Length: 402
Image 1 (cartoon, rainbow, N blue to C red):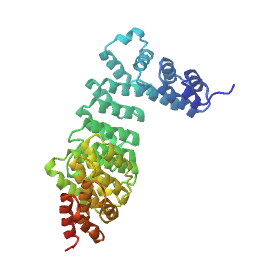
Image 2 (spheres, rainbow, N blue to C red):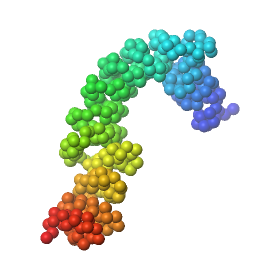
Image 3 (spheres, rainbow, N blue to C red):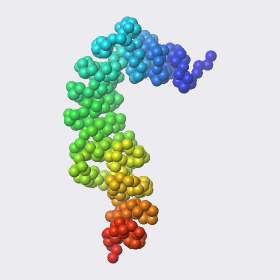
Image 4 (cartoon, helix red, strand yellow):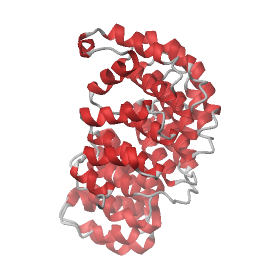
């Protein structure tokens, strides 16, 4: 009989078919993938199959690891209890037990000879989020298995005790990038001034995922060095890091006290003066258009003016039509910052039916100083709107008109 493909079994949620693959396939990668699919399907039969794989003497290590990871990340609380029953021979009545008993069981399981049990125990302790687990978890940060170290780091971040900062900092030198990344993430979750220099250091990591996580974590901090580090990330060789830096910068700017906003933005502008943009602007545009926080929208529009080009000028002009005066002002300043490349579209905007667009466009043209706009600016000195006429007159003077 021809077996169904893993794709078909996943689509049909065929647990029995996946169980056969785990037990009988000659390909260890196929077995591992079947274990991952069972984890996403969930349910009692999937859990039993994964637990059987963990404790099997015949399963390859790769399959056991996949089964352990699938089990660890399940949302189904039955997975935790069924694993405990297998480890300790407890009966179904254990489900009425207290979290304190569960805590003790998982702490004890960190001493297991079964690596895959330790992996699950390390992660489960983070779900319980009891600070009594901190020391035992710190104790396995030097475990020979990378997934035990990684899961312990994840759980220490979830618990959030400062006691874990120094031990986690040692993992920043771990040989495995995924361990370093989770250490950085957990340090960011714990937070505090002691963590800031560790995140700044991690931005220099050779692995892009570690750098990305470190830059995202820095958005919770203020200070000159943080600003320099985040702005530096905009020039990273990897687009995921550049994107993280852009969003961190927007978040960073939203935390700056109003009285220092102009000063900090000027410093950032100076650093980006010769920025050769290789940043994908699409997601910044999404934040500028749809950001749930008004401060993030404003900062996204400002950032577009720092790293954007003529391709986003029309979008910036559209922001001038909005009701929020700050968004109007920031969009105009962004157009001015883009400079000569925005002139043609700004000249076109002088014909807008929206007087506010005409006003801001003529102001921007005056600030940019392009004489190619002088005739159209002069025409607006006869505009129906007095406000537009005033702005046009000032712009005309700046362009050298008499």
